[in-house]
Length: 211
Ligand SMILES: O=C(O)CCC(=O)C(=O)O
Image (cartoon, rainbow, N blue to C red; front, side, top):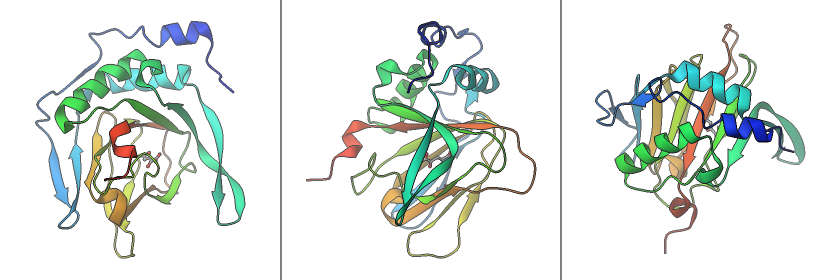
């Protein structure tokens, strides 16, 4: 059920353009090869105005508490999620960001979902982004807003994980076969952490299998 009022939907478009900006050149991008076929690009400080965007999304996001099947039982996800399958319905501030990412990664990010990790006990467990990536190779950008949290990625077959700690305004972009051969997570942590929002971009063209 939508928590967003008509007024809220209107306010989502009212972001002071001077406060929000990003680096179209992706000058701080650092690409880490996970293996021969998969990579993660970390772009520190990519977005300017991330704290204001965090506050706006926290206040106005269409947040839902979701359930997830784990083997044979349904569990409540330890985070809140708001989904915008059509980018046209997403907060206006995010539409400009999606367009910038589309130019950079040469595909159309036409939908997104956002997650709110309310405290250090909120998390998401090992998974890959299915069904938003059904191709052999996908590029999935994730924008972090608010408190830094660990983001881990490890081979699907097991083994050591690679760790990133994206701060507010950082991008983590998973590419190549990272959704096929690797799993990622945001773990719970004992150390105190304030709330964090992640903005996950999806491209309809990646949600269909290769011919
Ligand atoms: O919050 C993140 O950084 C990642 C979220 C994620 O992997 C997901 O929602 O599928």
